[in-house]
Image 1: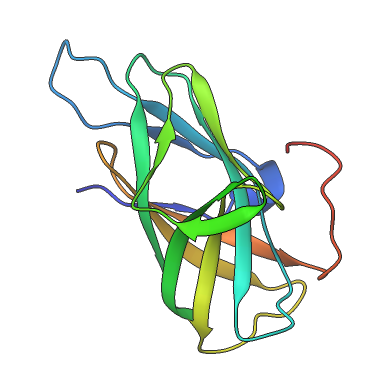
Image 2 (image 1 turned 30 degrees about the vertical axis):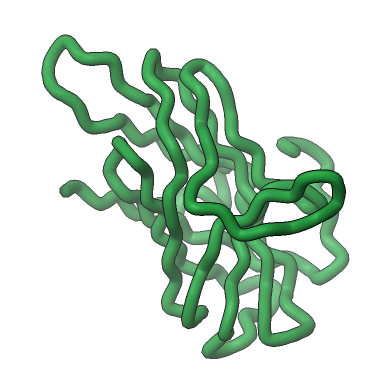
Length: 149
């Protein structure tokens, strides 16, 4: 499998990622933007980003890993209640938004607490597309994005 490193995410907010598939088959065409992690104040942290799919096929975010955490889990929030899920859908010609108060990544068992200004390397895995490694910037604990979410 192909692995793309996206140091440019912090500056451009976009990473193009073409999905896997045979010739003539519909594919997901994913891009990652608006990624950030608020500086953690405990032994856990949350991660937020938007995955946009310009392709003709849906995909799913199935997992994530990071060297900063013992475990990274995918969570959904429904009616204010957070719960771990196996995957989140990324519709064809749509987006999956991971945002504060909604669906998100949880960085558990932090090996170190990343500080504001640093970047955290995170590998996102999908049901159909190749994995991608994103360098996510650490923002102040109280950071609220002005656009993108």
